[in-house]
Length: 430
Image (cartoon, rainbow, N blue to C red; front, side, top):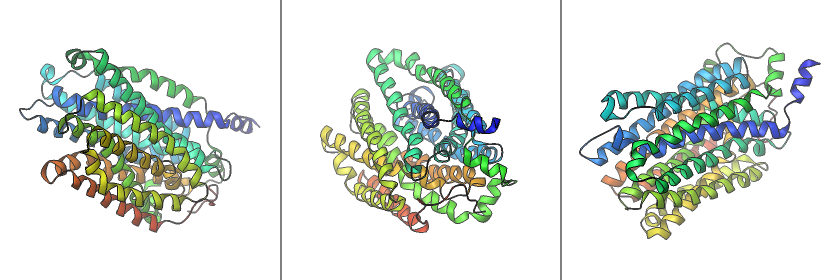
């Protein structure tokens, strides 16, 4: 009776808010690093005679988190599939929060020399480990508590944390750029978002600690289904699902980091936009990102694959017009950003649900987290770096071709999976 009472404490609003607030905090922390990697770190942590070289070095540390994410996925996925979603989510959020706070307190290169970029890379690694465990657990918290035929709608709530976190981070950097002089911004202003993230982390931890375990995982425990080493089981019995999940997520990552990190870097350097003006363009685009997430989730309740097939074809076509739009003045940059981030919302909304539904309950945390994290390595970790190199050496249109190629690979991944909207998550498929 006590266990039943505890399960009833998780109301729909409580579950959805808990899944949303955690990913909002995580993505806020992640994006303030992405913004600083373009605007701040090349100047303070990677001094060089060539600004382009400093930017490339800074973007390389940006990639470290994506390399760390599979480690976090394997680590937190193991415990998430063994001891439960709730406890693991608390640990993942704590790891991310501490790493972000330490970045904000890190002395610059002029103060501690080469130790500065080394410690920056270490703390960035910590961010990646935390995020590797956060995303999968947050999606499962929503999806495994969802009523029948509402999994895509519930699963899009943690996805909404991405645009909300970006709005917070971009908005803060925009305000700091307007309130502070350049000297003040580089002296201390850039640190404020990193240090202030501690407040958001505490809020997220409080909300996470008030929830109870998901009924789907609890049912699996009662049937004595947990496996010894979930990662080994995924590789041994669900390699096809893992491979398909990676490819299915690939274009999403490439698209987003081209529209945010690369676009901000290229727009404020090669195209000479001011930092504030281009952040304004991106914040406008993020609104389209946020609006299209719930629309795509509603459409996905009728079928996951048709929605993903359609939007992936559109992403491939968008790659062919990316360069002409980006170089067509302010109006073209606005259209490019809003169109690209609208497509991002359409592909991102149902993605978490689709990937999580590929795996059975005893390995769902590990399998979905690994698929998403490995896709992050392939599709996001080096995307800003590759795009910058392509734009400088071959021309901006090759950045668009890069996006189109990633969409083709995602279409191949979608061909490998079946429709999962009617699957029963409680039933084990091990």
